[in-house]
Length: 399
Image 1 (cartoon, rainbow, N blue to C red):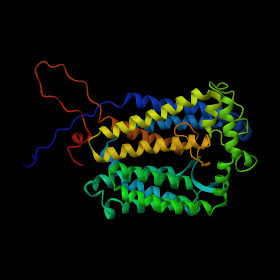
Image 2 (image 1 turned 120 degrees about the horizontal axis):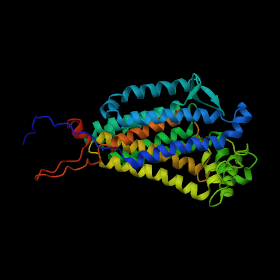
Image 3 (image 1 turned 90 degrees about the vertical axis):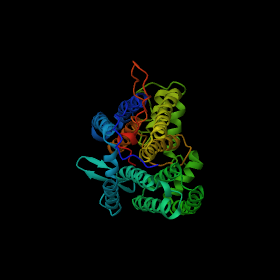
Image 4 (image 1 turned 30 degrees about the vertical axis):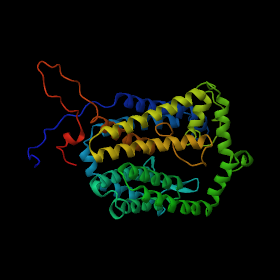
């Protein structure tokens, strides 16, 4: 039986996932409030203006809402067509940072100065990696279980980006790229044996990277015995734990936290969740975790319901990108994993992180539009049931 050459009429996508959109906007707004609460004293001492970080974060938040809206409505085909240019830009920016053209802070060179804004190329590289994985795996769907086509090329590109991260050095971003590659390959159906072999090969390499670096070993020792190293490498995590502990069930009140009074380093960036725990208490932290859990749940639901392989892989990758960042940040702040400088999506201070996460969230919302049924018309006569709008139908059935 031959397939008809008659083109499939395009179907308009449905509405976005309203609950997911509301959660994302709420997180962005919450981030502005918490950045001000966590940074006012520090900004006053450093810049003589307690509103320094508030003003900047508000501008970034407004831009993030624009980015969120744009990526929610942009055509998925356009995103797919931009895969290689975005990947190339990400690699070139990472290479520029690795060669020493970036701005250094805390012993690492991870930022490029673009006027008054510092851009972290590793954030764009993670986004580009997900886009390329989705494109490549969808194109090779029938051979994704092979080693030479479905597994090896994707690992090679991931290793290239990881090496550029380690050159900065940025061990955390390298691990994040590895995790994203693993979960997207797993979702695409790559052979479990290849994935397990990759993990077994990566473990000794990761151990060697940690053992050969004195500052990474200090972080491991601080993680294992933080209060024994309180005046050294364990200072940050012990202050974070004290912040959570002093919050109790309901917190000391928004704006009334004490750890942000120059006791907890990076209170408005990497450890902002500790300020949430102190000022809003256990209940506030649970609600924050619930918001991120809802983002992950709805994002994976959108990826599962869409009928196009590329869009499904893209939504799954972007969802896990946000979810893994949130989990890692909260785990670091509560002492569950060794200290690593990783922002809490939408909440921590930082322009490049906020904009990249907004783009990822917009893509998830975009994909969700193709898995939501449109309202049914009142049947005047018995009609054939209309299919729910899908991305495949909207793009003429093409993969």
